[in-house]
Image 1: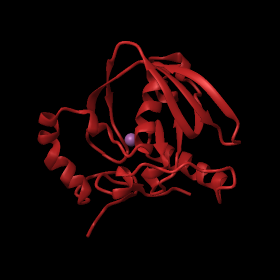
Image 2: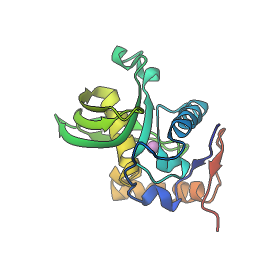
Image 3: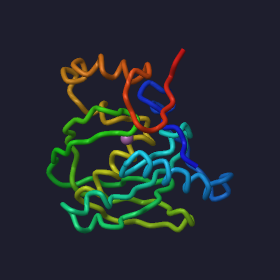
Image 4: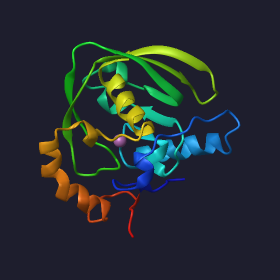
Length: 185
Ligand code: NI
């Protein structure tokens, strides 16, 4: 099932998401639907708050980056209750976008290497180091679980410049070729 993606302005995107347990109802169907929704929208990552569920779960498929970073090929992973426990290295800029904020991309500074603890879809526990674009996608999706968006990392001047566009998105005034859910009053 392809789910509507919650747009900038939806309160669920500003909330810190809750941990889940292995008996979370419909978990495997939810994960399947999240992958389908992400692929349909040509995304490389999708976090549960983006489909309106405030739980600590996101999915990643970094394959579209494989041309520049071969290790991204077939990097398909489910992250449940993740924790980024360390971020190291010199910050680097990468042009980020977000399925909840269509039509806006900005260069965002983040550290290149991260140490992550997480559970996969079978609730197996991992502690793994990631770097480069895979780390970048994880950092972006992890932010969603903390109620943060990439626009929270840009300067206040830039944010002021984007204000009109962001307001348009929140009101549904945006051209997008996948289904979205707006916070219309
Ligand atoms: Ni995003």
